[in-house]
Length: 321
Image (cartoon, rainbow, N blue to C red; front, side, top):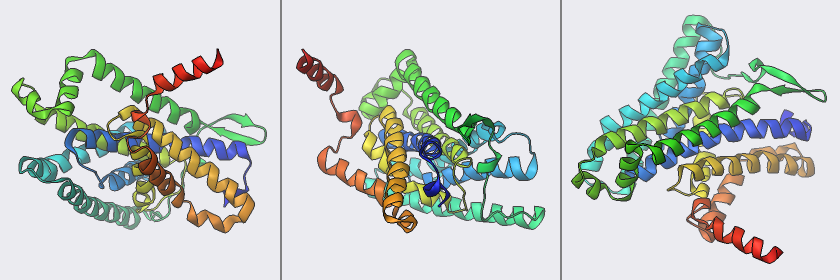
């Protein structure tokens, strides 16, 4: 409701921070799917764990600055991805499990991770007497200045910097290193990769670590943008999947762009509708990413990454002449 009442600048800054967290998580979903063919529903809890890692270390255990704990959230959720792969996904892949089985197995993993979040939250409440069922860190962010009368928060800039940095990391890794070449061969043809002597296990393990880590880092960013409960992962899993599908399920960069498309659309459209129809419309916010995802699947199922942008730009240039 505060967002609905706020001016466009404040809404836009919130939307950018939200989109940054969404973009990282969506690219993580894409990374895991393009390597192992698995729609990872455990991404919901991996995102939530990133959220709670920042909260518990900053607000309860150590203090300091919430950004100090972003790397911890990154590594912790990455390890959750490694556990998911080693304990469940690896064995199903070896037995040739189909896509539905792989997907449903991650739903079971998500339930286990979700249970551990609740146990952890109850432990913090019982030991440190803090409310872990409604977390609000949005007021704890660093204020860089003011735009008019409204504070310009650091997460607006840092979320974009992290997303750009992650895109650059993957560009250099996939195009300038032998590991990147091995990664691309494995994605294109795992059987050929094995014949060439590429250790596909290492590729899959890397994908699950980075996929989980990006979900955790996305959750860390979201902790400074939205309030949360142990179910915060379930709240954002729909827009995360929508962003991944809209971006294109075989492009990490598409996932990042899709995150901003979905995040900005979700926040800006719902606020516009709220100004027209009233604040009660905010409960229908989750419908927006679903509608965009449905439209994408109907009109262009390959997503943004499947569009021939060079052809579009060349046509645009030709029409101007």
